[in-house]
Amino acid sequence: MARLEFTPQLQRFVDTPVVEGGFARLADGLEAAFALNPRLRGYILDDQGRLRPNVAIFIDGHRARDAQAFTDPLQPGSRVHVLQALSGG
Image (cartoon, rainbow, N blue to C red; front, side, top):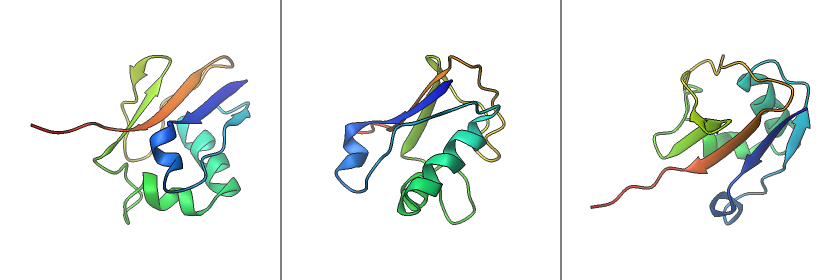
């Protein structure tokens, strides 16, 4: 089963469930998380459904490629980490 986790920084603002399932694509895992907590969608996606600039998603240690349709494939043992991207100067 693929596992989707959110970093603790996001938990300060909204409940972030750990989601496990037989997800074929990243979009499937995200939709499962959003179904558990609909408020989470607004923290992860902008009003056009794209990944917010301050959020990064990594699949098995590699940054997700598709930040619009989330078509990146997931394997049965994939680990997905959704985190706030760091910025600064």
